[in-house]
Structures are given as structure tokens and as C-alpha cells.
Length: 345
Image 1 (cartoon, helix red, strand yellow):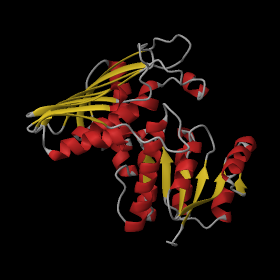
Image 2: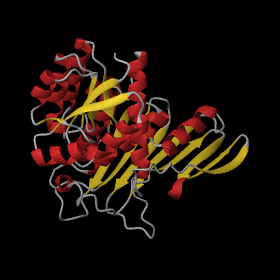
Image 3: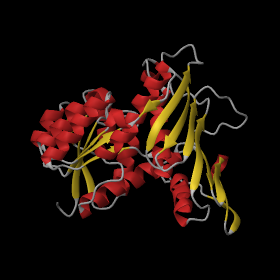
């Protein structure tokens, strides 16, 4: 690898702007080219970040540029072809979530990169939010003992459809778009899952998919958790986009509440702290917790490339998060518990 990593962004849509800001904040990284099939979006992002080399065709990008990595920020249906293209060219890839439309596609993408010896990471950024990292640090401290219960909750009435109108049209919505992050947080905090039971509902009549989901999970560690997500919950104080967390352990509890208040009761008594994420110069409330996590995950990617280590949210690891999404939908349809190991074979 060169001293300064040369990267390219594929996909110049709604969220990709955050990724471009984050790359600009990370030392020894330069985005040298951008790619999007929509010339207008390509021009907007290219002009905003001063990127002169622009492509409307990904194949031309790989031929025309010498790259240390690509950041794939398109929607899921295009991910497999782009990741496999990167693998054929020997270029490490970050892929936006959801990783793939199906578990079969995701497995094929992981295999392509493994066979090519190319690193692959999924941009599963919620676990990288500093409040979630603070919860993980408290678990690691041992102050609350062995965790036996968790609740990961994201309940809001925020209008996500105005900025991303495609979210209203898909048969799948909240589990695939938001719940995937919450499920990944549950894995991050309590370990892999053996069984999941799911119930869903559609409250908003103007969308095609589910906007409420409740998932009960058995973790292989012996803990159980509830992951609940809603975009139909009107509260006195809108918490978007905060994830609230409860962890009960053998010797205490952790509570991450609204406005990033962290209360830990454990062997050393009770401590209350403010774990608010920093407001970066280019960020804006209330998105700043997500925007800050984008810098964190992309910095992790750079460190992994430099050290030759596997990313925490590698493609192989994310198969387990994506399997949870598939199992959740299967369980919502059947109204029966779903075993995870069978999906991962």
C-alpha cells in the first residue's frame, strides 16, 4: 500500500455525502474518484468535494484508476456485482448495508473476496457510535457481572421517507433498513444468536413494508434480548436517531437513555455520565451520532488495511447479522421461532 491510500466512492446518494466528509477527516486517505450512474448526483458530489475524476460506469472506474480500496455506497441490489468486480480487480471493498438482498448473494460476495485475498467490510456503523461503544466498554469492565438480558430499542416517528423516498416502496422496510443495525448491536453486546422470534406490523398506510418490529432472541452466551424498532411511535420528545439500551447483569445494570445519559449500577455503586457524541464541524443535529460513527468505522477500515487485520464488521461477520434479518422476516411470516445455524450452513 502507498503511504496515502487512494480510494474511490461508488454511489453518490443520500448517505454517501457523510462518507465523503468522513474520508476527508481521516489522515493519509484520499478519495481520488467518484462514480454514479446519475450524472446529476455525480456532479453534485464531485463539485462539493473537489473530485475531478468522475465515472458513470463502475467497470470504467476500475480500469481507469489505481486504487487501494473502493467504498460502495449504492443500494443492495447492485452490491454483489460491484463487490465481485472489486474482487476481480484485487481491490479491497467497503460495502454499504444491507450487505445484499439475500443471504445467498452475501455468501457469494464473501467467497469472491476470500478467493481473491481481498479484504471486505460492511458499513454497519451503529455499533461504532460512541454511546454504544461506551456500553460495550462498561460490559468489558466487568462491573455488572455476566449479562443475562438486553433490550435494544429504536422507537421514533421521524419522517425518514422525505430524504429516502425509496424506503416507502419496498415490501421490506424497518427490519431491513433500521433493524439490521439494532440486531448488529445486540450481537456486538451479547454475542451471536441461536434463535429469533419476530412480530411485525404496518401502522403507516402510505408505505408498503413493515414499520414496527419486535424480536426476541436467545443468545449463545445464555443471555436473552429484545430488539424493538418503530417508525410509528410519537413521543413528547422525539429521540431520533438515538438507540436506547438496557443490559441486566448478575451484579448490576446498564441503561443508555434519551439524550445519551448512561447510568451504570454495579459492584462499584452507581455512576451517571453523559456519553453524547461529538458534533463534528460538518455534522448536524440530530444526525451527528450517526455521522460521528461513520468516521469511526472508516478509521477502523484504514487501520485494518494498514495492519493486515480483519475488520470487526467484515463480510464474513456480517453474514450473521444478515442471517438475523432473513430469520426475522421468516419468523414474522410463520409466527414461529427460527434457528440461525441452519441459515448459515
